Structure formats: structure tokens, C-alpha cells
Image (cartoon, rainbow, N blue to C red; front, side):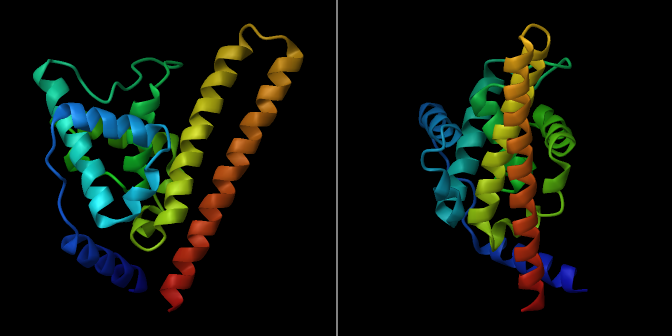
Length: 196
């Protein structure tokens, strides 16, 4: 019952927020590159900032769709890497900053499957974006770092000497531990919000 109340409150707050902002594809590309680099990432904690990110995803995806390009460019084969901007957008979706409706039709299902296959821990905390945005943003960035470290480890495991591989494995473990710690913090935040 309480979970339903929290979700309903989140939907009510979300319904008052501005919708995705219309923009040119060139502006969308710039905004997405800045978001992927971590600059201006905190803006998504405001309704206007989230509307700009969602608008950027829509405009950029629509422009690429007109050119016949599927976006985000998701891995087709095991071991394929995501580009930084594509990874940032997929994790933004997983964290609740971007909605499935912001992607072009062909990408919606694929983004959903990839996001929750890679980051199943985000499923339980996605609703927290509305009242624990800062923590969710950190969680989104930690998930991005973890994916990068996993991909680096997989590339190195075939050719790296044991010492370099061991150091990369330590980086991977730290990134995983950071993600788990942040996820636990967000879950605690959700539990405290439910008690209020």
C-alpha cells in the first residue's frame, strides 16, 4: 500500500513537470555530449533539466532515424562496447532520468532490455529519482563506470599480462562495490521516505 502511495506521489509530481523540450539536433548532440562527460549532469535533478535531457534524446534520435541510423547504438554481439554517449543515455533511462517514450520506436524495447539486464539493481530504486535525484545521479554515473571497467577487463583478459589484469580486476571490484554502496544508500533513502 505504501509503495503504491509513493509511486502515485511520484507520478503526480511527474505529471506537473514540463514535458521534453523541443530542440534542434545540433543542440541535442551538444547537450548529450555534455551529459555523457558528466558536465551539467546535475541539471537532471530539476524538472527543466530533465525536460532538456529528454528533449535532447528525442531530437537526436529523431534526426538519426531520419538518416536511417538506429540510436542509441546498442551492442549487437557479446563483447561489443557502447560509446560513451550511448552508455550515458542507456544508464539515464535505467536510473529514470529518460523515459522509454523518448526513444524512437525501434530502440525502446532494446534500451529497456539492455538497461535492466546490465543494471538489475536499478529496477528497485528507479522510482526514487523524484525524491533522491542526487543519489540516483551518482548511481547512474557509477553504473556507467562499472560497465566501462567490465568492458576494459574483458578486452584485457585476452592479452594483458597477469599484473595489469590483476590491477584492472581491482578497479572493477571497486566500481562494483561503489555501485552496490550507492544502491544501498538509495534503498535506505526510499525506506526513510516511506516511513515519513
